[in-house]
Image (cartoon, rainbow, N blue to C red; front, top):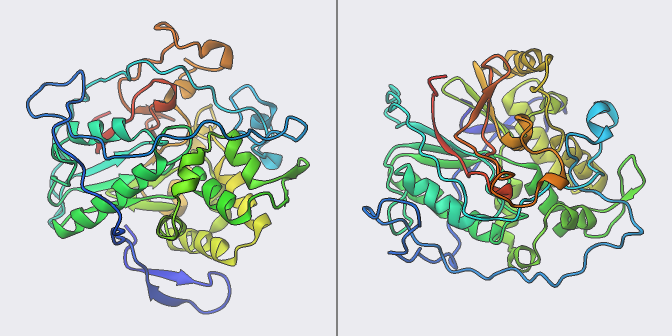
Length: 393
């Protein structure tokens, strides 16, 4: 794994190395998680952790005018998926099934051996999308937090694969929790870190650029319209503070842990930003620092691509990334497993009935065993996945 310093001004002359903050301080307004609220469907001993206080989203905000183009993430049936070179996220949104009880499936894994450097086992978390309750329950189920919601995993390593906000009720609460766990894990000798997802880029763009037109390649686009059409929550925007913006803008895009190449999106677009992990992360950060609306939109557009590993060409696409950045397997979020399995493909199927609700048993290993998908489809009543690595299969 690449640690410590980051390249500044990649591709712009000699490299100058400066220290990069990886574990961020907890903002003063983050409160402790109240205890003794039991998660339904779990063994009462130990009790499931409680949910931090939060403000429910105000659903009365106005959607963008129908006279303007749509900038929502495309579904597998959209023509954009057959046109990767000109792809832009301008089709309809991913369907969201009316939520019932989230499917809870216990994933049995053998404890991973402790690395020689003394760090504990490695865990990854799929897309959260504002579902704070489900995140707390899943982390507690894996023994990573205690009933009060505090870090309890000692020297374990925990990586979030991005997409903390949008669609669900409490994206800012999710970010606050991850920031707090980062500090607590570091104090215990482990760490909790996070990657940049396309929804972090979208929220940053909506806050910075609002209704400023950008060159989308498919007509006039704005970050604000795209954010709303992709599940943006007014309550998140109202609670968004500078500390959240700074934290999101510093996130890495790609990392290597124990031979696992961690990234948010199942795309080869990372190769457009550098031939090493350091170069990719530096280029993404520098793009955000320049604060150019068109550049940031292009970054968001590329990170919204998906399904590069799904078809016959998938193993080759994964190997291209592994050859460039190292590792033996790619681990990603972004594309819901029900989509990858073909279980949910249209909005017509998203009726919330028991038959239509995706039954997710755990991460999806595919592309000849070279890729692990971690987005369990929590937004469509699937499962928010927390998985220990390595997996046996």
